[in-house]
Image (cartoon, rainbow over all chains, first blue to last red; front, side):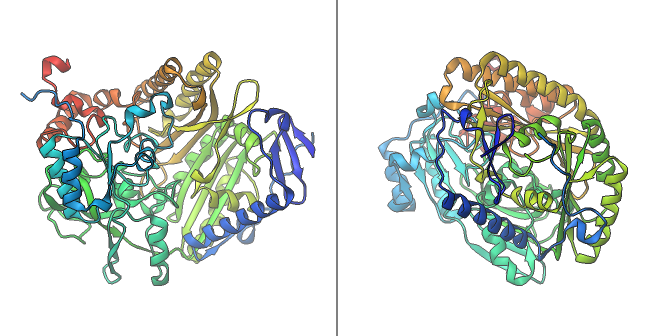
Length: 78
Length: 511
């Protein structure tokens, strides 16, 4: 677990899973194991892909049709 | 002169009459059925939950059964509140006087698909996602797209005059409904369209345009039992592009440039203010990695045939760059856009002033405000909200969105949304009244800036409703009251919504 900024931690680097700093979660308890975490992330991406297909036959990315960079700006260093 | 009509309670005699009219299995008095239909996701005075619980739930399956329910309600003078998905955030489906809750979800059949004339006729209890799954093999699409798309229902969209995320390309609910079958409060069944009465004609000049009168009434004038809807070709392609800016002022100017670009495939332009970006950077995984220099965001989306979308993307990117925009990448753009069709799946939490996480419900202010007033309204709404947060400590400011609101075009006016978290478990009468006062201050600011109280959910809540006469003006509200009295002489249909209890009060009493 890595502190990203005040109040935010990076829990799973491989899945880009960020979480609220556990010290701020004393009133609301959250206990998700790694297997479930991976399942939730995978299902979320599948769901978003499904939503794209539901609204249009094809999703075009801006970087594919312009000289826009595919990746967003680099994060600030902390 | 009419006098105030006080609704009667639901008695055993009423229950028996309902069971005989529509069948015992469609009449529910069990606690579970009633609790589930007491509130909507908007902040709610949970300490007074029982005051709003309906006495009985009915689940009719046809216009004739709806008519029978309304005739019984008139006979016994008991209130009837229509309810669809219950996803509206302005309490339109909340029974203010208990009574009969008329749930339309069993009226969910597709009656006719007419591919030649590009219409589909449905019962109002159908969900848009389910409709589009049915339509997909035919290559057509019904493009009404609220943030509650997977769970909201066509009847509710008509009842609230819903706003669509892609409405600047395809129009909003009121633009997509061609004709309606409506059961009036007294039980008569009528067919209404854009003048005339031809159910599939989109533009007519014969007689009054009665269809629009029945869109956005919050179920105060009738119950929709059938709707004929517009069909579009399913888009070949979509493209979402999100841009970051170093100041709100830059993003605001860019929003103006993008929304007036004239791109025919442009379906939405959404401006996120600094507080929204702060909130997302705090609580949304897609935005947490954003560099600190990004202070505001503009989201755009294109829909249409692939050739047009590709060409428009070039113009869009050039315009965004010229106005200070920095592309936020394919993953954020495509992923965040897809999630915008389904915001109700997000578990809601907020922060107390010390940063501690607590569960919070979601207030979504949804005024309609013209472009020139956006910076000023942003400043005022934040000042109001922050003052109440500081004093009471149970609210959380989740920032503001400004969505293009004009059907078929992106410019002009915007759905202005401030999202506020409310820690409901901590509510008592004092803090609930504080919340209502916060709402009132926000509404006053909206009216001061030539805005309308609601762009999509309606103005049914305390804190909104009492300003309807102010927004409409004396003549306009007087006309509303006359129409309500004419169609609903016994005040049985969603009574007191839209401040229309005044329609049944002597002028001297109401003054």
